[in-house]
Image (cartoon, rainbow, N blue to C red; front, side, top):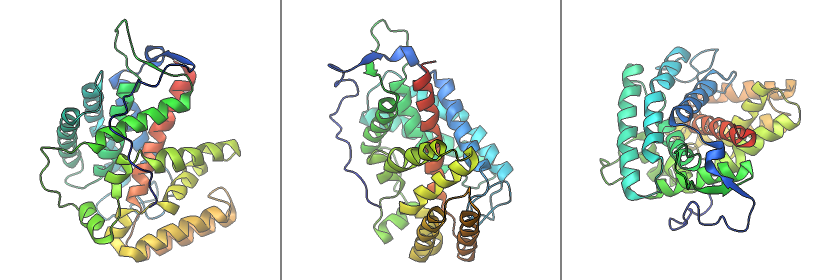
Length: 319
């Protein structure tokens, strides 16, 4: 995965405001409860999106024997207090090692809540990390405090969402001082195949969200493609370039190559809104199911893209 350089930690969130069109953040503030709702809605919308190649959707469990759509929805709803707590902890703060440690502890508690809701199945561990960091960044950007001197922000909505990703990246670059030694599937895959995984995706500023997912979603809408197919095409655009550790864990390089090549083939055939694209999508799913592989990392990044899209709409409306 070709990633951008990590965003420097010394870059303060509100230091580059002078000389541009600006307005105060409170003009588009978002309470922590609203940010949590946006996050949960994004997870639910990703889970319900159908058809997705070898992933849980309305048709069935895909390559996941321990997951199904009702369970995914329970997991997403169980995480609403976690996302609210992440937003609350970040409000009025700047990225720091202390904030990183606090958010990590909230995330670990959220993982326990998820496991309770799913009877032990990992439905959204990756999403807690990816979407959780964006919730924290958004909480800083869309500050709903009643301070008489709120921070000022760039006036263009795209600048808001870029800033959210930048702040999330700055937080991710600090070490989690209280984390136990990592021995997850993702960590073993990162070491074996020398890929960045979700950690690097966050530290590099979420390039598959802000640089691939969001532009793909907006381009599909601009072409008049229906929302469902536009979101499927967005997932495929992410899959086409992502070194997905879920595919690598389940099926190694064969799984990753099948996912990337298949996603590109669907898009080259016209995408999910065309007959040729749907045939290519069926072929992609067949290939992944034969390998017992699913693009779970891309699914998490699609949920993150949908979350950022909600923030962009909010910033554009100024509501």
